[in-house]
Amino acid sequence: MIVTPTRPDVVLIHCHDLGRWLSCYGQTSVPSPNLQRFAERSVVFERAFATAPLCSPARGSLFTGLSPHRHGVMGLAHHAWRYRKGVATLPELLEPLGYDTSLIGLQHENVDPAVLGFGEVGGVGFLPRAWPVVEAAESWLAERATQSERAPFLLTVGLWEVHRPWPAEDYEHADPAEVEVPAYLPDNEHSREDIAAFYGSIRQMDAAVGHLLRRVDEIVDPRNTMVVFTTDHGAAFPRAKGTLYDPGTGVALIVRPPLSWGVPPGPRPDLVSHLDVVPTLLELAGGEPPQDLGLEGVSLLPLLRGTPAAAGSDDQAILPPGEDERLLFTGKTYHDSYDPMRAVRSERYKYIRNFVSGPMLRLSQDLEHSPTRRGLGDGHLRPRPEEELYDLCRDPWEQENVADDPSYEKVRGALAQRLDRWMSDTCDPLATGPIGLPPARSRAFDALPALPPVSP
Image 1: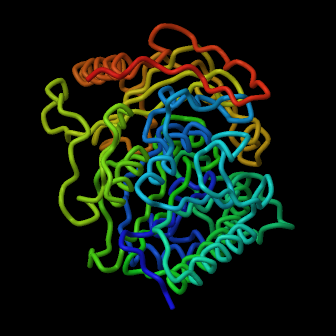
Image 2 (image 1 turned 90 degrees about the vertical axis):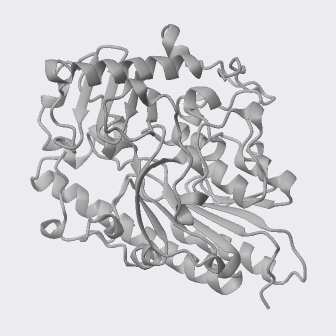
């Protein structure tokens, strides 16, 4: 017998390094039939974005509703980056509303998952592969089915896939001749070899997630359960992961609202952000965002119900006529080296500011040793400009930098001004100079220092 709580349950499934490499996002050759079927019954946000193009900062934003410099995780958690004092995580916000919260599988916001605010933390190893994680999640759900009364829950399920490496002994590789090579990569044997291996990891992740999705509907009440599937950031290829181009920050975000809502499935073209997940789930749970937290996103419940979402910004006079009202801000500070950059994206334009000199693409070690790198050449080593501007209508793959084009000067100036204002309003430490490494951890957990309150 399925026990249904008064408020919706939430199952949040998140994987690694996927970007939008799914058939439901138009990449028809990608082996993802289970997520395709899920998408056909769900709302697919076609233009969803992470706040950062690497794991820990992006996941920190997903679970706090704050940009990385505000929540504190500006680099990888195993490099001592951690949340600032006073930052509240999604489970910490939902538990006072009566929710049970559980983490099963991957997280990458802290070396110690016990400090992330979940009521329960399941142990499935340091690199939790898809099938063991799914089996653990299935067992957790089955325990709920035996209870005569229970609280609503937030269950987060984190998968290691589809992070590199993709060895043939773990994943069945696709035929390199049958893969799709995106326009930002060279179409040669090296890229195709790499993508064929990537497809194998996607196939295994998709099979495991498909099994979990079926079991969710069998064990808990789909009429009263919201299911969310997403990933942390873009795929692990040059000009994607580690960059502020759309392939680096664009993410899959597929949401199936409770079936009792009667929401028609289908795509939504609106610009949305991982920052919107916390406000969405807070509203779903019957709560309101605490004003002192300064959450940066907006609830997606209006979009999920088929009405416009609240505006993310109300100061669009500086933007050219015809621009939509929402701006999304992204950033990178540290990965395996210091590489500070910030960006602002509108419907039509992307403006990127690089704060230190270096090559156009600073590849992380997993990309530097990839098959794709062997066929990439050295064009990405040319010096980067201080500013980049892309007209996404004319140039969706961000290949032509028009920052120095006089005909785009008004756009460049407007977006540069808006980026400056956002950095100031959110107390981004990069606005005042270089950002140093975090202090070493102590035996007792020590949070990073709090930032000043954000501007009203």
